[in-house]
Length: 185
Image (cartoon, rainbow, N blue to C red; front, top):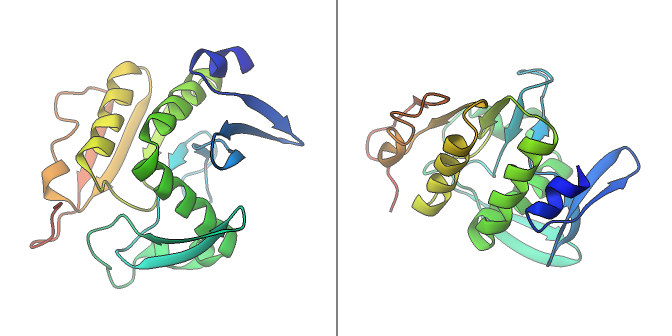
């Protein structure tokens, strides 16, 4: 696994029972794809960002950040604003991933690509919470899907501009949950 990450220019270490990767600003962080949750079960990895369009205040490595969620709206009753999603450690993890997709997309691409290969991942849900919030970010996922045809991927989006992102890609699917009047700017 260490060699696979090194091929992507990343350092992987074992920290207790957890494998971590080194980011140049944030230091050692958890791998970006998380193995399962209560709803989707183990073996289905997911990548999530902050939900809603509200601003979250977090402290990461003693640095204060105000991070806006990646969704184009704040949907009443959104599951990603309830339960475990309200815990400070979950918000901090989602905030870090949100910061990374906006400020270091190359790192996110390399970290996810390395993890898919090193952990032999076969199933990925993009956005158990959150959504596409830029064209560059959406195109990163399209590239990952095309480079990993044996990995099944799916996501939901409320952004009309991205509803056809995976059209023609056999191993990836977008479930459209479009809300009229909302779109990517």
